Image (cartoon, rainbow, N blue to C red; front, side):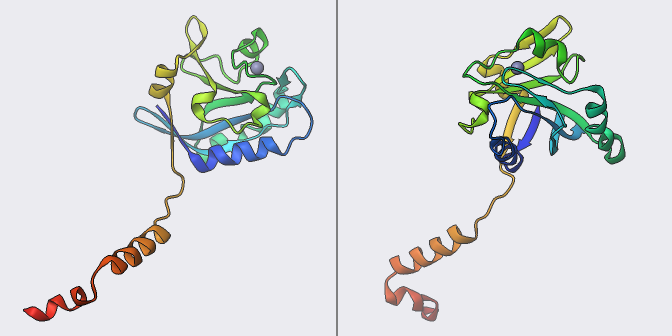
Length: 180
Ligand SMILES: [Zn+2]
């Protein structure tokens, strides 16, 4: 199971949204390994060659985008790339040029150049098995990936709830502690 903070997912969509050309884009999700998978800490955008129907990361660019892994003791947990249409399958090119061919590697494909700000369930998730790349069913995706909040902020809800409950109380209820 790979855990992705929603803050990183949102940053990824925002970065992809900055590209004005009609081209595919790619990034990597890096992070730390845990017992049953990994936790994403870092989105890495390589200096890729971007084309309308495919992307390519030359070895030098891949090298540059991987140097921090050893230095920071991080692992590459998944690749994410965009497609021009709603099709989120893996092309033959995608199979051949994926960031890793090790069984267990995960590749996520976002539709419509990610301009529709897709959620995880609107993507295509592919798993590298010993037999090759295989697209996961929606049920299987839930076993391999999950998004968790990167920020939880209860400040306003707490304040609002406190004011609301104070409004609901009758004026005399504020003096109940005097009864004892
Ligand atoms: Zn592709």
